[in-house]
Length: 317
Ligand SMILES: [Zn+2]
Figure 1: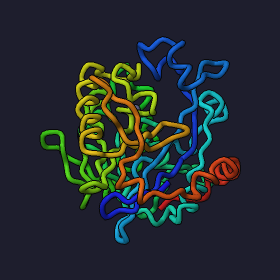
Figure 2: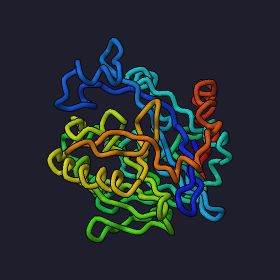
Figure 3: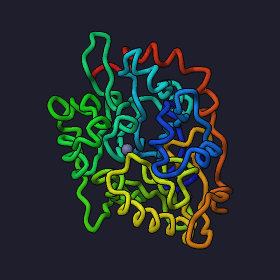
């Protein structure tokens, strides 16, 4: 799917799918309620998308988050039902790995940053996007080097290890002032602390053509309702405040919301519903500029070949 967000042609590109425990994804919400929205499999897992946002203005090619990547053992692939498709979906959107000038990582959890690195044919860890600088919030970067017992399993340092040594000059640590930072023309970062320390949500575009990348603040459409937040969140009370503020922005100023983990519908508008919020039709200014992209339709058919060829495809820079 493509829309215009200010100066950028914005394309939502699927990096593949995986599965996580439905109970963990919905926190205090009872299963009889959440399974009506997203059904669980026989191991209680629900399907998760990894929807990346590709932004092109003729100068920069920015990729927001990059999915799970390919560094998974057979056992882990089974555990998480990992299906990685970025090597097919990105070219289908008219972009090669080497075209990406900037990767913006909302945070360094493995399902957002795992695709940043890959193993080459010799088994060495290298960068997936050979020409890209990598933008991460400074406080999330520092947190990821020393996570706590609750979120250690979500931070896997093989997602970013080259940035600590040979690729250090690619790393751009983003400092926030009053929880905001400017990344590029028409791309501002909004910082949120509820899910994890220093999560950075890109707010893209200008005027009536704006979109917010919801990352793990609102991972799917089923997480729009206020109490529907994840069990993974480090600071759920803080998350509720941030969520109310940002969904209010979407509803009141016609800002579209991108759902990173929704396996079927990655982009909607937001409406108020009393004190709560609901997904809604795309804001009119975006609906008029939107079109379907071939990238999503190719994802299912190409998944097996992309995962088997991925180890040698990107190479080390
Ligand atoms: Zn996360």
